[in-house]
Image (cartoon, rainbow, N blue to C red; front, side, top):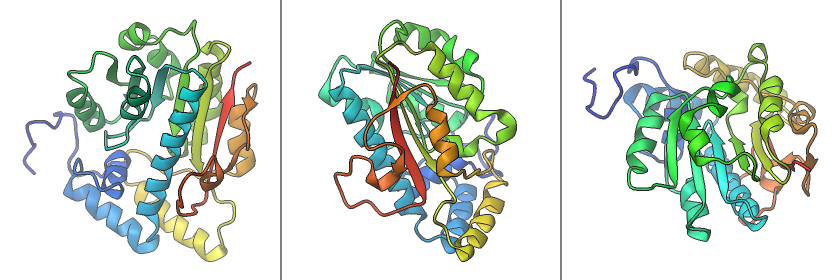
Length: 266
């Protein structure tokens, strides 16, 4: 397959990417045939996947607006994915033109597109980094330049931790990020879950997992209790760690088997 000029040479066009599949579900155009084929296979098993992607994007919007209302003016978005309409900098800078945003993702296409999109925006940037290695993210020159960790930060982990297997110690990574946040900072998480899924749904979920295992990001669903544990040491804001569509709802988002919550560091 011919490599388009904007695609980093490191990208394997024969292997689907979870980030590019997510872009496809959201109606984006930054995906390839291999991603669309994998995404359509998932849709055959779980036709609600595009709705689930939109529901996660809706939670991102609600969470960012909530943090803005709490006075947060700097955001670190981990596992940010490919830029589509309604990204963090658009939401934040519309309300506060001086808000700063750093996107971090391991997917080179996501970073390439984010960098191009933000070329004329001095208050937002994108870095290629793996959230599983907190010190490399926190020590990145652009992160240190843009984010003042002596002030409150909005840390976003939306629809990303369910791509981090237990072997990579997601709770340990999240704890490291929490550690560097100053008082008054917030952590927002959404995460897919097995809770409430029927036996038939679990069987379909295993088929979906088999598809994602062919990507760079195998899918790992967790229980509500495991997801709530990610907020250890933080004051979870109302209504708590709840089904995603129930967190400060402002629209009729489709129900999906996922939890969402926001915690504040005292």
